[in-house]
Image (tube, rainbow, N blue to C red; front, top):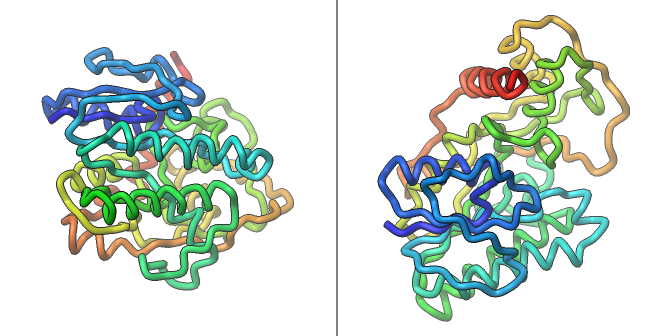
Length: 297
């Protein structure tokens, strides 16, 4: 098929591009390199360097819309910029897609807030950041396009994604931060007591979910493990993978950090035939191997 990946030079996008090309698909990357990296661009793909805040056109059967302003703090400091990328950009993607299916990367972690139990798609989606609000707007655009034009666009609400190629400098990259600092022999820091819980899902499972959504309708779908892992438990798993014993340093908790964010992926398993397959220990081991290789390069 003809696939377009916005944000295809980024963490998730570049992994998806590689998987699509391995299947024999014709792939076009749309990226302006605001956060994507040129070295992650697969040379077998067609590259369209473009900022999605401006209109564009593509020829596709499916558009995987992964391009985003993904830093929560940036969204709060400059909500206008965040909305330009994440809301206006999504509208431009829908216009560019035409009759092609759009699969949109939304966010469970930024949308559901505190989760006493794993949040289902019917749980209140009440964002507490401009980033989360913009993702909700993107979902509404897709749903509205489906009502108006009879399209089959689908929103996927990701958990906390980690894995190879994640940038330690970007929002949500706690695994990348821990492993990168361990590879350098540097101090690792946990903000608060480390009891905060998240739903960590490996990037390979995210790619599988994106591919499983092609040609399907419905949603939105939670794409996570349904397993609550504390930051302390995550740090211990990173230490095991890295073979180190040094404990982290604890500092004051950061204002606005959600204590428990976990999503229920049952609908995705039931309707898409997808479920997370990679355990946390296995995923972190793979990520550690990549981190060591990148640090040595």
